[in-house]
Image 1 (cartoon, helix red, strand yellow):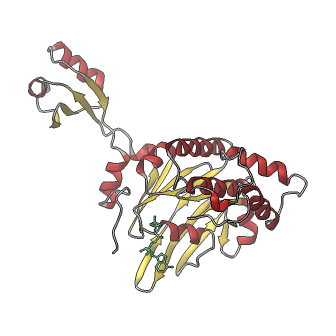
Image 2: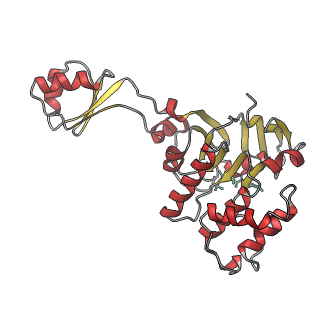
Image 3: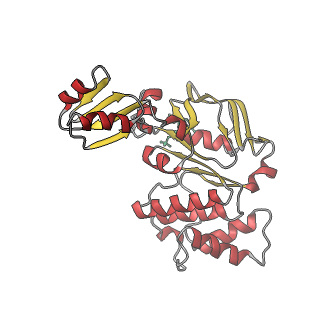
Amino acid sequence: MTPVIRTRGLVKRYGRLRAVDGIDLDVRAGDVYGFLGANGSGKTTTVRMLLGLVLPTAGEVELLGERMPRAGRRVLPRVGALVEGPAHHGHLSGRTNLSLIDAAGPGGSRRTRRARIEQVLEQVGLGGIDRRPVRAYSLGMRQRLGLAAALLRRPELLVLDEPTNGLDPQGITEIRELLLELNRGGTTVFLSSHLLAEVEQLCTRVGVLGRGRLVLQDELARLTAPTGATVVHTPEVTRVRAVLDGRVLGADGGRVVVRGADPAEVNARLVSAGVPVTGLALQRPTLEEVVLAAAGTSADRVEGPR
Ligand SMILES: Nc1ncnc2c1ncn2[C@@H]1O[C@H](COP(=O)(O)OP(=O)(O)OP(=O)(O)O)[C@@H](O)[C@H]1O
């Protein structure tokens, strides 16, 4: 299958700084790909290179099977993009802005323009907006308008840089639902984020950037697969050690990690010995633990100047 996004040895240097340092991204059709990294790790620079907005110092970018930036005119109409701080005409209304964007791009008949604009406004939760100029919009509304613009041409691929920036929790949930719905309809979604929880809830595949390098890239389900151990919650840790002699891998408060991936078996042994069990589950690493192990730092961490 043709990859939807493929980069090889992608580098961007700013003076002595390697903002992006030789990354090989593989995004497949149907993925919801989460591109994680702390602030300043190079996410925006990468997204700009994918879209041909910034030229790489070295390496290759392919979008929908074609080389960028060379094939930009052919490929970009099939891609919806939202890059940091979407630019709109502040003195014009949201509808007028979308109308200008639609008129400037290829495809899409003029007759159906109004209907298409209303549809995307509805999709992003701006169906009821009035004629207020965009400069009076909140950050969250601007973000939604940027997303509406990205959706105008029913893209095969959506490339979104921190799409939930400036949104409140309800807005974040709405955008998440929208992205999942678009994905179910066949759209591949690539989104950058510094929020682990956002990526964990939304994405099927994850790439983690650390100081310009791709330190991890895999399916989320594989990264957070069971470890082969069972977690037992109990007020009686010492008795668990006695009953499951030698199988206790670690204990932290009332949480005991036991070798073996059969919680029912562990439960049966403890209960038959009269040890109270208040909780039981297969052990799985959280995405945060996986990222910490790979990057040595959490993507959630806000980095200071380097
Ligand atoms: N035009 C530029 N000139 C010089 N340095 C730049 C330029 N653009 C980005 N950088 C630097 O490259 C590094 C990566 O920046 P980038 O914006 O890609 O990171 P990011 O992961 O998107 O972070 P954030 O989430 O804060 O936007 C940073 O150290 C940044 O200061």
